[in-house]
Amino acid sequence: MSWRIRVGSKPKPEGWEQIEPSLDFFENKLREAVDDPHEGKRKAESQWPIHRIHYEKNRYIYELYYKERKISADLYEFLARHKIIDTGLISKWRKPGYEILCSMSAINKNSTNFGTSSICRVPLAQRSGHIAPSHTTGCVSCASGDGVNGGPIWWTDPHTLWAAKAKKRKAAARPGAGADTDALDEPEDPEVAKRLRALRGDAEPEDPEVAARLNALRGGAGPSDGGAA
Image (cartoon, rainbow, N blue to C red; front, top):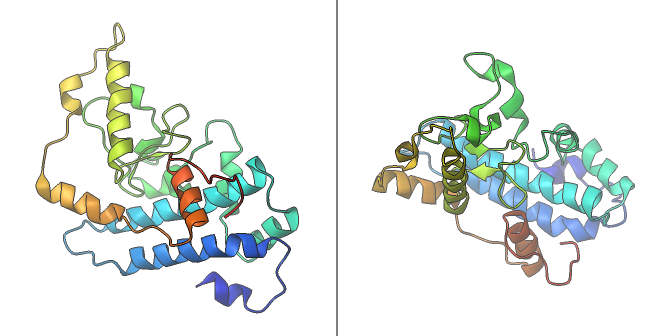
């Protein structure tokens, strides 16, 4: 259900007009991800963009409230009360070891065959063989210390996938590591590359401030004036 239906014409706390364009952007991206044709994709792959958009929307609010102190407690509580934000995920980010957790699904042990957390919770240095993403979320790693530019390593992002390989090669090069570095290179499958490009998507919001903040979440330059979107 759209947050606009849940909120309706209820009075909004001060600062709402600052974040509304960003909330619209994330909702539109989520709708596009849901409506995107799933032909040629595994069932789980169609959910990967949804998990990433969910992460980015909540991280946007988390940064504004806890890091930058640019929205009020009243506005944050309003977002939580109307379930516009995922308070469970945000609360996890404040705990050691979960600072860049990609999704609550990654620590839901009931969703895996062996009753364990998702593979993305295992540090890259402790893995062997090919780097692989979480089947559920498409996250390569959201373990503390493995993140890229303050966020998880997503399989659908070529830059973060490259960074994941670089991190693992560095770990494998340590004396006594014994990792098979040849296994880190992925096959150049054009169909896989095409699918990843489709999952990633390149459309950006028209509002330059929203685009700048989203770019900052993905590791690029932030808004030039430092203001909220």
